[in-house]
Length: 451
Image (cartoon, rainbow, N blue to C red):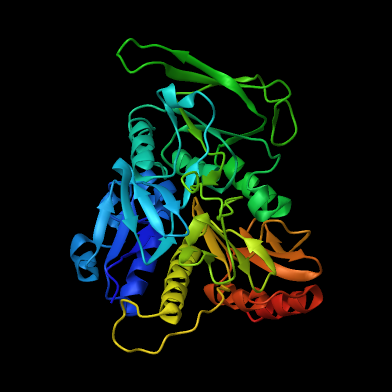
């Protein structure tokens, strides 16, 4: 049995799934789980929803308690960063220049929030990627807001929130802030909110929902920030967002001025894969850590979750998903394939004579959801990068949407909101494998007609 550990770098959903799968699949050797944050593994989707709203406390986001982690017999390194990886020797470098020679490595470091230059010095400007980010922003929002009533929680005086970025995260945060009673303005470079993720047609419907709730939608770019120094030692406090000339309302009119007064600003302009620490030239870190169909980036080195860009067998091209379900499924797949590789190469820490499993390509049906107000949006397959979109169900009054997404003559994704759960579940099968477009349309019609 090897004395070298398997190290999992990243202690969120993908990393935890990998660690649990390694033990469940028979790895008896040392197992190290490394997390840059000081917190036990927690769930991220509620950060921009229930936690930001104040409906949930951080404890409810924990994926496992200390007692639940104990049977894994982990060498748990929280608050520790991996700073380098020598691929040939599978040796990690950690904070403090500690070296950790490994039998195998699973990289699940996720993504980091993009930000704007200079904003790290401004009080009142936030990003929303980690638990600490969400708690800091929640602290700003829950100290404002109108008195409770008429579906509005909170109290103490309305704050003006400007959200820079009109993607999924920005729209989810806008919905929460409106429900807390704040004045909300969303500024994005795309003319339609969430268009990059769901297309213009569905994005237009969602924009109407936000406008009906009182969210101001603008199209433009940020030129800078106005600040004041309150003299309390915390440094400059943001007071306004300045837009570049030519910014417009999302409905096409003038923005009504390029200075947006703001007490709080959320910068939600996307994320970047956390690969800066991977400088070994044996790895391709272009838009995430490049992997083969088995999630292998190099011999003995696998990747999972938001950071992994791998060859999806069903779609025939490298893809990277920042989806919660994918994180868990890919963490499990990467762990199983790593063990299979180690077993094929010789004696491993499983040590029980179990026949070596075979590696299997990872071919999930992508799934994501978004909650905005009381509207739940669910999507299977690929909705981004489509060259064709149809919305066979588009009922604005009934708040029902069904959209089919195609690429190169095949249906690759489907999105729905406001449909019965049975119909939504049936849609998954339509895009499990990319079907010819017309065949998919017929199956969509049958699924929705079954009511």
